[in-house]
Each structure stands twice: as structure tokens, then as C-alpha cells.
Image (cartoon, rainbow, N blue to C red):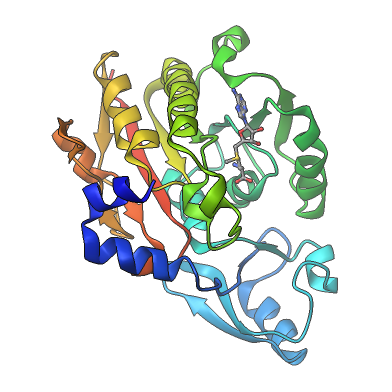
Length: 301
Ligand SMILES: C[S@@+](CC[C@H](N)C(=O)[O-])C[C@H]1O[C@@H](n2cnc3c(N)ncnc32)[C@H](O)[C@@H]1O
């Protein structure tokens, strides 16, 4: 696995990445503006001895620099005033930018970190269709939707590869694809040893099928955000490159803000679409987040 990092990052960045993976993440929270304002939540949590620092990119997000409570069971958490979420993960809904009158599809929704954020940005209006294949993960999704007061969603327990069976079109689709979670080592150190190259191959085949299904369901001029919590090119640029070379009428669009590094256009000796430079990568050693990848794709038909 490390040999691959050296190939696309070089030796110095690989060493820095591995070192950063050993450091714990600063916890971060997203205010649920459906229930409380960011300033009121800050006031309430600071009164309890927590130290919150605003996140530059997210006006209602905070890094928790010091805490005196269990952030996953506080009164404010249980009331649904905030969601514990890494900054990189918060960016997904912001980049997709759903509006209150949109029909939004979240193809791999459980346990709902990004779904609850999408609902928040839609002001609990429009329609939010949440899909997940794994029945065991649906209860956690339901609990989070209820806790956060989401009212505009329906849950479908199905394989999103069969999305066309639903016979619907959507103008905003989030594909937070199942992945090896290579970028999550800071959250879960066991992934350092449990992730194998073979698994990358298996995941990338599923990711290709999901991406094709998502693009087929995208309305004219609609946008799909492909993202993973992995920095593996096999699960990111190589997937998007392959699929976009097979379908017509889709193009990668520039994400309005620079959050991370440009996507790769060449890797492991393969030249890929030049527009992949518009996709973005977040690295633990450069951005102090989990490892993450985003690519925004538009139906230009
Ligand atoms: C990265 S997790 C999603 C995390 C979620 N978006 C969030 O932010 O909380 C990937 C999810 O994809 C689901 N999944 C895997 N294969 C799927 C498929 N073929 N169709 C739909 N969901 C799938 C898994 O059950 C898992 O819940």
C-alpha cells in the first residue's frame, strides 16, 4: 500500500502523510441550523467549558479545541443541535449545494452525516431520497434523521446500482461511495494494517457501477458529487476517468472554492482526463483532515 503512495505523492509527502496518520484528529461539529443558530450553540457549549473555534470554510462549523464533556452524548447532541463530523465530510453537502426546491438523491446515505447536512441546506424542503443497501445501517440513519429533525426525506433500503428501477430523475446526486476508507486511518488506526490492494480492486469495481447508475439518473443540467474517504487513485480519479470515457454528455466541473489539492491527471503511468484537475483531494498531512476526494460532474445535455 505504501509503495503506491510513494508513486503518486513522492517520498517526502508519503513520510509526512504516515506521520500525520499517527496524530489524533481535532473533533469538529456542524451546527444543525434547522434547530439552533451557530452563535447560540457556541454560547451554550462554551458556558459548559468547551472551547470552539470557527471553521474557515463552514460558517456554522466549529473545531472543538478543548472539551469538558462527551461530545457524543451531551444534552445539545441528544437534542440534535449539532452533528459530530470531520471538516472534509462537511464539505460534501456544501459543494453539492442543494436548494430547497431540488430533488436530491443520496445514493449511499447511512448513517446520515451528509444526508442530515443536505436536509439542513434545503431548509427541510424539497425532496431528499436516501438510499442504502445495508439493512443493518438503516436504524442509525433513522435515528440521526430524527435527532436532527429532518422532515423532507424518505429512506429506501436497496442497491443503488439498480437506481434506474426507481424511474426517477434527480438534479442533485451525492455519491459518497463505499470505499476502503484509506483516508480514515486517523479515526481508525486498525485500517493501517487491514487494507489490501486486492480490496482496492473490489471497491473500484463497485464504485464504477454506482457512478454509472448515478449519472444515468441525473437530470439534464443536474450535478452529481462523487466523493470517498480514500486517497487511493484507484477509488477516485481512475474510477471517474473510466466511467466518463464510457458515457456521453457529462463533464467534470470546477468546484467554486479551492479546499484541497488538484485531482491527479496522471498516475501509475496512466494519462487521464485533463478536467480531473478540477476534482480535489484533501490530505491528513496538508489539510489536517481525514483523507478525502471530491469530483463534481455535470450532465451537459
Ligand atoms: C461511505 S459510507 C456512507 C456514509 C454516509 N454517506 C454518511 O455520510 O454518513 C458508504 C455506504 O454505502 C452503502 N453501500 C454500499 N454499497 C452500496 C450499494 N451498492 N448501494 C447502496 N448503498 C451501498 C454502505 O452500506 C454504506 O452505508
